[in-house]
Amino acid sequence: MVRVAKPIPTLSPRSERTPDEAGTRLRLVEAAGEVFADRGFRDATVREICAAAGVNLASVNYHFGDKQGLYLASLRYSMAAARDLHPVEAPAGTDARGRLRHFVHALMRRMLGEGRPAWHARLMAREMVDPTDALGTVVDEMIRPAFGTLSKAVADLMGERSTRSERVKLACHGVIGQCMVYRHCMPVLRLLGTQPSSGTTTADLADHIADFSLAAIEGMSRRGAAALHGGRRR
Amino acid sequence: MVRVAKPIPTLSPRSERTPDEAGTRLRLVEAAGEVFADRGFRDATVREICAAAGVNLASVNYHFGDKQGLYLASLRYSMAAARDLHPVEAPAGTDARGRLRHFVHALMRRMLGEGRPAWHARLMAREMVDPTDALGTVVDEMIRPAFGTLSKAVADLMGERSTRSERVKLACHGVIGQCMVYRHCMPVLRLLGTQPSSGTTTADLADHIADFSLAAIEGMSRRGAAALHGGRRR
DNA sequence: AGCCGTATGAAACAGTTGTTTGAACCTCGT
DNA sequence: ACGAGGTTCAAACAACTGTTTCATACGGCT
Image 1 (tube, each protein chain N blue to C red):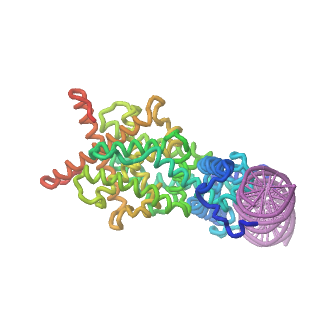
Image 2: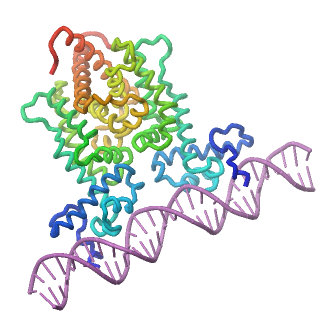
């Protein structure tokens, strides 16, 4: 009855009076993340989520307002976990090559991570291909800072002073794209029979992508410099 | 009543008695492709599709059996168009570098193409991130042949005799990933403000990706060869 | 104890969905 | 003219969805 005026049931467990209250919210968020990642926002039913969480159907409305509120909560939960478990910034003092490599490793762990929220990257993949209103939040709170880290490293490698140069942006897209394949296309790779063999670890993949990208950036810079003195390629 | 036994209403307009019959089927397939690409298989409603096509609600059942049949038909239609409009095989006699570049150009035109079915790549992106039963068909009829073309070019560039080598596979994934970003992440890039500037054409992007990949492959081969005689990198 | 605000529970509501139905409608060949 | 086969139509059906309702249980505070 009190919730006619929406008693701020939105986001984090700000007070957690009973351990049980936080328990219900948390189980709901985690179950929701899994189901949303598997089925997508619309395909996921609140009934299935509540059953998986072992809570009553009305709980999602009581704690999160509506289905979308729950979705946003699990999205935030997932982003926080990704930032905490797999930060993209290398330790201070790392050189540009090391920072790029560190970024790729972190991103690949996020993509393929079997850590706490294994559904994190699947959820993100869906949000990108099929954006909801929450995409702006995701970009601002997670993607933009990470992209800044990457483009700083790439700009340094290229000898560019600005991270906004077109060359830098394109190279960054390339790096991210190489990582993304292993999340966005995994079912395809499996059917294709080209998925990484079981002996290949996430770190191996990350190292290959870092090597590939470093070779590309350095190779292109060399050719670009050569082009200044010599003829055009192709 | 006759359709109790399913009078083969499945695939192509094999007979097109009346121009109108093919008309209904075709308009349905095209409208469905658009709506499916926009909203996804489940979110798309047959009511919306039929309204967009200007046909009766029952037509989808009559002509395609059910919603899934219509989805499959629009998927096939889309794949055929992609193969016809943007073949990935270069003309015979093209060298490996040229074949890689040709592949990237074709793939990027498929990704960003504003051609007949502009919804083709969006539909594919959804099918990859959120696979349906049709994914196997898509892989067999479209992706596997294209991947073969790419890995042949890459293997030649690397001096590998087998296209199944792990190095070749990883490099191919990298090339594809670089192209994919511009389809799977376009809304993100827009929000990020790093989307290709309006002066950048699809061909420009493709050239950059080809240059990037060629530099990477050649650079890694050089280092790989150097590693045989010298020390390990990193 | 006795109240009160919070949390949970079972059931129902209202709307939308894919699909089906049976009649009407053409377009033929005879 | 006329019936037949294929096609379209408006309407209805049955299932499922997110959301709401109201009653009940719990826990701390006076």
